[in-house]
Length: 468
Ligand SMILES: [Zn+2]
Ligand SMILES: [Zn+2]
Image 1 (cartoon, helix red, strand yellow):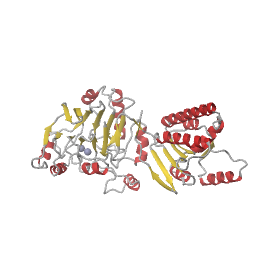
Image 2 (cartoon, helix red, strand yellow):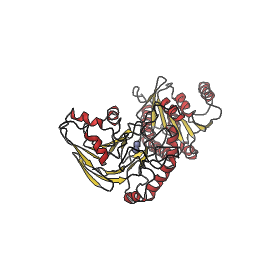
Image 3 (cartoon, rainbow, N blue to C red):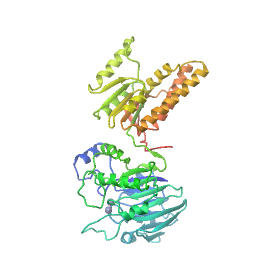
Image 4 (tube, rainbow, N blue to C red):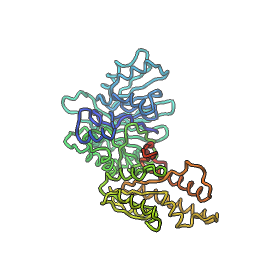
């Protein structure tokens, strides 16, 4: 099951286009926009169809060309803007599209179905079980009651619903947006479901006087705990907060807060490969050639944190005046309140780091050099060399485990040395190969990776899950 999040925002999106609050300003500065919440499952099943869903599919590298079913939670316009249905009749895909929605929402779709277009409408209500037949297998869907108290004067004259979706590959998704705290009836129906992915409403952030139709950071945390208590989720479940509004703190702050209840946020356009372990950390890996600006970039990111420890992995100052001058220059650049440690025992430092603090590891190439020095890794004796390589692999595994377990943010710097000519010496080749392996493994376990070229930072595709 692959879930493309076409939107993760509330009705007004985040930032709200009219708003100048700190949260909106900060998201704008970070070039981040969240559009109304919708999700595309395996390209064939759309969950909610708000005003930006169709455009988002194109923007995020997918499409509705294979769409066979649409499930609508309720008729609020951020979840159903049915005009896009007309566009289908201009194409004639040659197979049926099924729209499943509460009756009032379905009525709103009727006017937008093109003449002779093969679209079937199916009314649904909470408590029903559906089988959605697709060309790539059947999806089992349970329609569940939302607690979307709409209040007086609301245009919505029907009950909103949530969806429990099991894909042909067995993976199970709980799509739960536009709901307040779960009622006892709902909890009973999802007891023991062991969802792989939960997409859960967290509209109101730190605004707590909003009625009962949505969740805020407090009620979200409670809902996550309730799901865990009844085994609707397990320790492997990926819980992602959606329907986010500007009442939330800026994304980076929100990310840290959600981390505390083992949930996360992702950007609009993220494709979640269900069943993979979600990356919940904020680690950043910075890779580049010599003098590409890596250290400087790492320091710029770390400067946003209040508590920073700088781990210098190179040899301490000694006889070589050039090396000493470089160390002094680097040190002068760093703020006075940063703690500096000269060490290659990275695992101990990461394990000992306080939650919310920041570690800068500069750099893994020097760490590898010194490690190989320590374990006689440059030896030309094949047996000694093989043992040393095994040792490096073990240390790398320990480093990755430490990166997983820590609640600190770790910024790692390393050299990209594999792009030049093949080194002439066997030790040169060994170093190049080992560093390539270390870099690849670290990159697989950091949410962000940046490649530095000529002083410019090139962000690589953000990682949201890791295999295994
Ligand atoms: Zn909504
Ligand atoms: Zn709504």
